[in-house]
Length: 403
Image 1: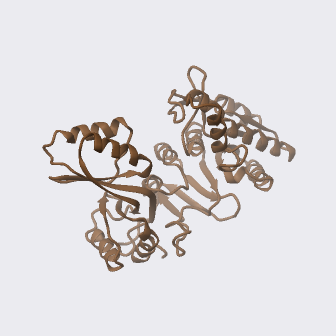
Image 2: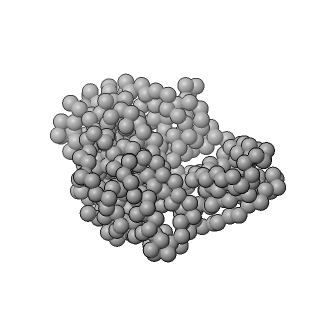
Image 3: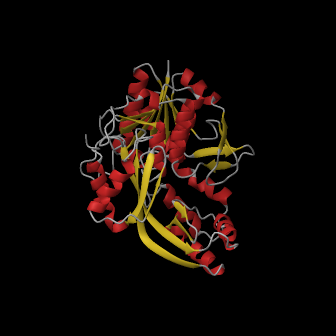
């Protein structure tokens, strides 16, 4: 009997109807001869009583101390509640089920509290209950340090839990259930012609996650690629086939067509472009880079010229960055309210004219490109946020993504 890991997010466990749907899905797996392992997130989103952000707010109300160890303990509570409720729902339908914490499931991490790294998985207890015919429910987002402290795996941690367990249990597949039908060619709230992809490669999906798509966490994709396990994105509330995330070798490459090279387009908002007037020989170059690193300011798109440096940062880091620039007495300009748009496709490598076609398409619509960068699978551009909707729709049409 093969193991199937299913993960359900906060919206999927937030109502009685959706919890019953999860229970029915798990029972259907068992009746089909599979061994189900169900990973669950905390119920709902910020404002819901058991949502992780609600628990964080409660913690902060108690004082200004931000003890990562204690914060992890309260952040882990939402998933524990979800797992117990789902297990009880399944029991009420006549099937044995057990809820396990990350600790009981054997997910061992370091002590990087709030964003722990998984060191190993010891799934003996999971196997024990699966062999007894139980449907196993595991808290997402949780682990335990070698000294016994509860840890959490960072944002998107439940996806990471599912992928890690899929690898450790040698699962047949890992299914990520959410509130959309699968991975789409662009944000459907902005691009009405966006469509669900049948399949996408690990590398393409990883890039989409890093560049703004919120369907699945990038750490989960990295684990799935390492283990060679397919990730399937499905809708908890529908019956669509979903999107399979797999290796390039399992995806049929299309015949060469410069109008059909990209797979999808992702976008990120709250970007600030920083231009610093600084000569390459100025000793403040190194001091600037060191200071940004010390303050954990991440630079994204970077262009270094003879007399200036141009890079992008997240808006949340703007105040720290400006403070550093002033401390170093550097002249600078900021362009706030920017977005980063990234076109992603494994077919673009070595194909001439792709960047030209993208630039011309945006220029024709009077959309100013502030910066660009590219790799063997991506082309990114920084634009003003006011042009985001037009940019996504233009590129989606230009590269025939609704085909």
